[in-house]
Length: 240
Image 1 (cartoon, rainbow, N blue to C red):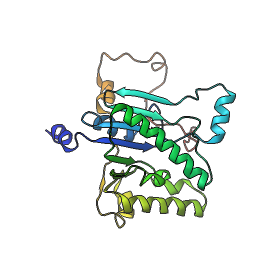
Image 2 (cartoon, helix red, strand yellow; image 1 turned 135 degrees about the horizontal axis):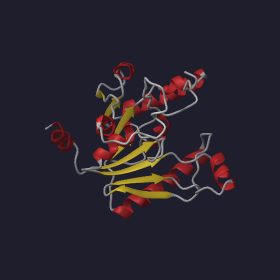
Image 3 (cartoon, rainbow, N blue to C red; image 1 turned 90 degrees about the horizontal axis):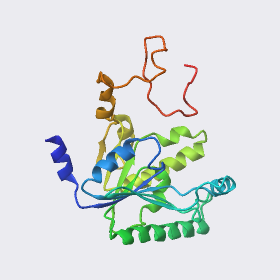
C-alpha cells in the first residue's frame, strides 16, 4: 500500500536533476530516489562539467573526452557535459557564457527525446546559478550534508551558505537528510521535509541466505567479523 501511494504522488513529470556525482559513482540517495521516480516520470540526471585542469589531464592520459548521454532505464537518462564546455573557477561574463552554452546543449538533449522539463531538482548549492535556467520549472532543493563544514575558510563557508539560502528562498519544496539539517534551514523555507538515508534492504538481506557463496578469502579471517560498508575517502581512518 505504501509503495502504491508513493508512486501515485508524482507522475507524468519531466525532472532535470543536477548533482555532483556521476550516475555510476557509489550509489547514494540521489540514485536511489531518482531511479524510483523514473518509474512514472522522465528523469534527466546531469552531473557537473569537468574543470579545465581535468580536461588537460584526461587528454594527457587519452581518457574519454566525448559527452555521454546514456540511457539507464526507459525513462532515465544520465548526461555528462561535453569536455568543450568545462567549468571555470572564476565567476564573470565568460563563466556565464559557458553556462548558457551548456544549457543550450542540455536543451538539445531534452528536445531530442521530446521532453519538456517541469521540475528542476538540485542536489548541491554549487548549482545555485541554475535557478532560473529552465523557465516554468518548479525548483526542488535536496540538502544531504552540511556542505560548508568541508571548507576551512570562513569566506568559502559563507559563500556556500549564501548559495543555500538562495536555493531555499526559491524552492517550491526542500528536503534534508536529517532533522539537524532541517532545523537550520526551515526558517528560510517552511515547506521542508526530512528524507533520512536508508539502505537497499533486498541487497543486504541476501547475507542471510544460506545458499549465498562465501568469498574465498573470508574463512581465512579470524572471527568475529565486522562488516563496514562505506566509500573510502581522505577522512576514512584506515588504521582503525
